[in-house]
Image 1 (cartoon, rainbow, N blue to C red):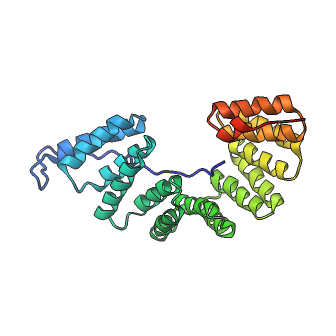
Image 2 (cartoon, helix red, strand yellow; image 1 turned 180 degrees about the vertical axis):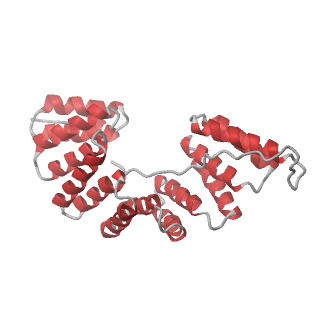
Length: 277
């Protein structure tokens, strides 16, 4: 199960100051901002292809519009067009080299692509430029997790929580690092705190299930996995994990049923899983 990360967008609409303002290229500034505001509306509604088209109109008229590159990159990311997104974040950074959010978002794409060293480089720049931004600290912590640097990850999650004590993902992801470091009780304490803040977050139950499984408390793990799936049946890895717990209890019919659910959702490992009593 991958730790969750957060992508930032800029959806604030720009007020038009007048129809006589012109850019360096002689294009009405009002026209540019009309396209930009329209693009932001499309983006906020999840109409990513339309947003890309509108941002492209902005960039065509104003090739130095950093926020248009930034948000178009976000739209490309939502459509899984990661190479296009990387190019746009590079353009945004070229226009504003101190744009911490652009470095941060580019770091997320590198993370998704498995380029963790590049992700760490970008997210470290984001943290340096935005030291009070809990999201950047959290996201760098997730990269440290991928690099198996759990102590550094915990430090980043702790720093994020000092800034935002109600940051649920920082608690749930720190729990994973505590578990990896052999500290299940600290992990459970983090998940209890997360539960108080967000009692319907399925990741809390999924992670708690992993802890109980690691302690060979398979029935308790199944209970947590079941609650997670009740809240979000789309959690593929949880179907597989619950199936594995059923297998440990030698309940092969239920194990195979869960493996089939995971297989239907694209888990190739689950498709090959066999339970033999």
